[in-house]
Image (tube, rainbow, N blue to C red; front, side, top):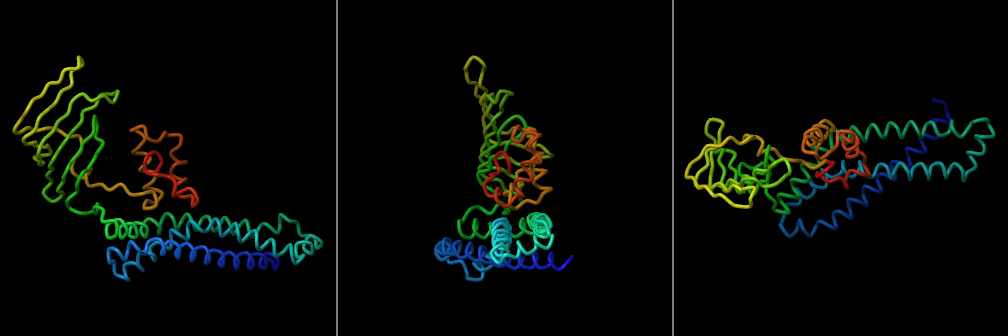
Length: 292
């Protein structure tokens, strides 16, 4: 690398670091002022508050990097032009394309670093920050707890709703299974007060089966105890669907692959959906319905 390339690269990186630091600090200060009332309301310890914002830093850096690179390019090249350094370099036989090479290669390297950050670091830190906010501040249910409540699960051939599921006892309460045909019409509905797993089959207690006839009539059958074969086993009920920022590239790709048979994401857009979640400026706007 010659003297000119080192000089341009030094000026670019110096402004980039200052811009990135400024954007990150502004973002964290605004976020702190916006959330501090929520932390004080639930009396979260100061250490947990600091840990929350510490875990948020990688995600903030990831999203502020593209803006910082843009600002650094504009300012660094603008300063060179104002000081007539670009004119002097062109007079010395250096083309504009030659001047842009250090900045372009730096941008490529920064893109690779951002990909590594989003794939290896951000999923872990974001999961911890979201756990603090959702469980300790918003008081939402901890999805990793042994008892899960109000579970909706899309099963093969229908929809399954569990009012309470105990992972330790492998038992359910308040079961409703909606049997659907190929046109997504309700064919049969099975309800039970409780159920438990017996030899890879679900034993339902105190329930009824409602069958919807093609002629519009309704047939109701009650039972005290009945064994049924649900397509899914308990490990499926305990799987937690993470947000896009909590998944790495392989997890995002696997999620899209699992959604394809359900008609959620077309095969042609699999990699577009996966990569879009790793692009800083578009990742926050993609919910987990459709593309993750």
